[in-house]
Image (cartoon, rainbow, N blue to C red; front, side, top):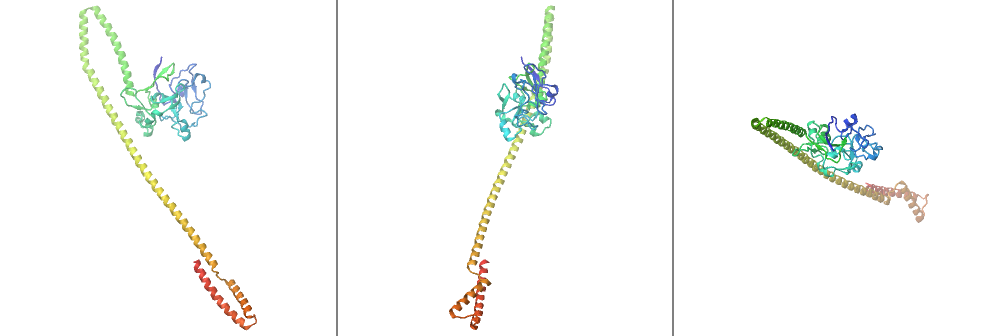
Length: 410
């Protein structure tokens, strides 16, 4: 049958297993022919597991070489990989159903879960329980990051590490203490069901806080002590029966008197225990309310920051739109300026602004017309006088046209 073993580790999940050649899941060193110890061949990997503890089929133990994190098909052979349910980066990990999504987004905290964390959380399940393959976290997503580990808080760990992943609750009824499974393993608070020297994956795994572990161990001792005292009492009563009725009656009276004297003290101890439990419960509720208040404050701050970011985004969009309008207006003005300049050049060209060459051409043309009309030649004195007059008039006309052209261009 299955036996119960309390995990004892001083350095967390997987670290002790590599030193003593013990399993990283159940921390038991024993090995059998059909349930051997398997060592991962990955670079700088310290995972050592029983075949049953890691879900390796019996016909695959001889060919098994790598854990899920170190196998060649894994995209996360890096020290950044961590469990989704606890802050530990060591130990025997299995892939989740979100592995492909984690590969695409390069999210190192979404692709793997410790075998022990998955088995100890009642809301976590496997798609292939026989092989402990593909962890389903749908039912526990709402609790991830919602509660803080008591052991991490006591050790003074950062708040992000304390609330990372999903914590499990003490198995004692009415107790609300929360722990990471690997933190509870490090503090020897995990109770494992063992079967033939390794983990019985079909049986539930319990986590108990320090107080209820000590109470349970004390209760078992008291029950054993009461049984031994009962045996002694029964043998003594048999002896008194053999000696006579008077001795028996006196023995019964003495026992009843001592029992009556013990009743008030037992009642007082019961009330003291009840008072301590009530005070502890109230302190725990106060701490929970304080944590809830802090979370609400953080959410309010995040909402305010989100609103401010949205307002800034709206302002930036408006400024961008105004800049685009300004650019469009400037381009239109530039096009109009180019058009006006082009039209001015065209008017200047059409106005026929005369240069010296144009003046000479006009004078020559007029001279030719005069020669043809009046029959005047270059050796005629009248032609020379008329030529000077034409030159003067042509020069005046050229100056007037040139001034008009400058005004059009200006």
